[in-house]
Image (cartoon, rainbow, N blue to C red; front, side, top):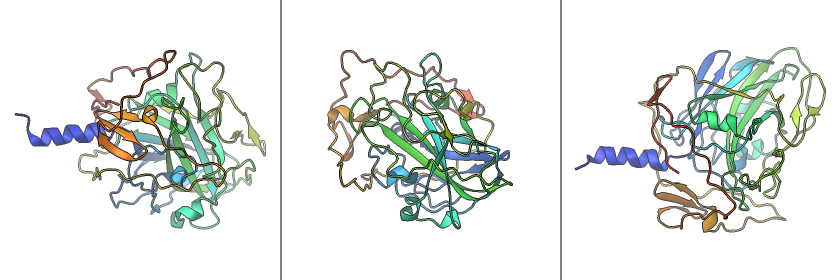
Length: 349
């Protein structure tokens, strides 16, 4: 007989098959982010759970579902790198998806960014500082690398004015994006205090919600039959020294965004994690566009559990059937049993 504890552990590893930003590295120092619904603080805004958000008009698109105020805003110099490590949702595994872009935005606050509620976050003017999509072979190398424990890196523009900022780092998974409202958004927000002598205030900005439309070419897209360059959603990437922004749609090989192998990090075996049954995503629909109910073809299978717009349940949706011309999401290369001191658990979705 299989021990009950092993069964429960396997269930957690299966259901928690998405993720959150567990660590942010600034100036070589690692800051641990709070686990969802843990009541912990830090520079990362705590989210309710790791479920994907599929509605770009919802409040969850800003910084995650029911994101809570952060509790610190460490200093970081303009021109410095920021590093993000994505956990698979249980404290032990890596990010589970491998198809879609990584994007990072920043927004300057008038006061203390740690005190902003969701309504205040929705008023911030975000400018994009990096984006990374497909490499020369057509693979989504940046997101794929996260599956093996790599971290995502971006660079704070060297000329922006000092002050308090929110960094909005995001993964968009596109393996179901051939369906309307099939793209999955995973935003994470951190609060920092930028130092330096710059005075640039980027003008090409967007607000969340509002930056994305569910029918944008980089949002509603069949990546299995896509031809040509991927068109990134949102504004162009800001270029330091230009006083404006650089680059538009398509891939951006000059993007300051890069991935790297994950370094050693503190153990998370004693971290708390709320694995309660997820609740529906809170959302505020656009007056002119309403989100249609998702059909069986837009479910995201996570082990033997499947997510539909109405919530979670075992076998409550049929398996998604891809078009004949489509191919399944490429399987990531098998990860070794241990990687940089971190144990990899299998995630099936």
